[in-house]
Length: 89
Image (tube, rainbow, N blue to C red; front, side):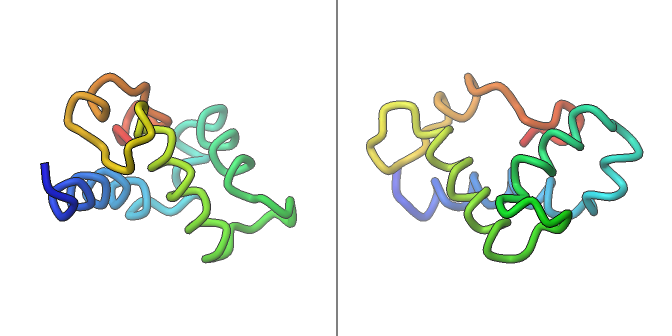
């Protein structure tokens, strides 16, 4: 699997999360959304800035890359539990 395809799969999956404002997610699923938000808010200031968001996405990539080879396969992606049950990312 080439790197371009891996990043395409990861980008599509994470775009689903990024497309929904965190405040809207908090209203729809307060427990899960709040936990996700708090995990992404690294400096605990009540906001997720671009740097924190980027670090969260990178951490998500590493969490999906089970064998730590720098690539995410479809199998790795499929067997990973989702952070957002309704958004599948």
